[in-house]
Length: 234
Image: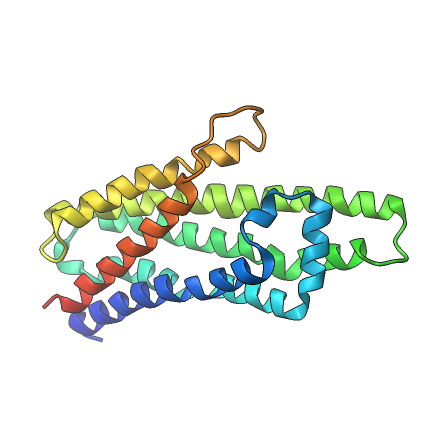
């Protein structure tokens, strides 16, 4: 595959991944009241999840795997713009791949772990002790798989990747400097979402509640624009 074809494939991967991820996300908002449901008591989350049935599990499965094009785009970006010979782009690849994979792993807990807990918790034959044990197990899995893996490590490595790529854009012949500034500003906003994670373990920790939603939206927009630049480059 020549450089032009590789660059176009990489551009399409970024655009497709950023667009596709919104489909299951929208379905989760409609059918599971996501992400507001995560602020509810564990018992209510498990009950709502069980009521969602197999379709809800399939939606979470799709949410995890539609990020695969983004993983391909992140892995191929440095090769697609190899003529830039940027040390920053080379350094960005590893944290970018780690960020994408850890976010996928975090989401997959809703496919292979939570359904078992939800089914056990809502079983009419389950004793009070069993239900209490399930609630504790869910909170541990949710905190580790969601907060630690998906949100902290996943977002942190993704933010690092975005910042490094944005810095490389200032000396790029393919991207414009304004896209680099856009990426750096988005990195700062997205990083502030970590305050919400720290608030889960530190009482009264200051939280920038809008940072997570705004940062993720701007991140997706930034990748779409980057994909367009790759498609239009010669």
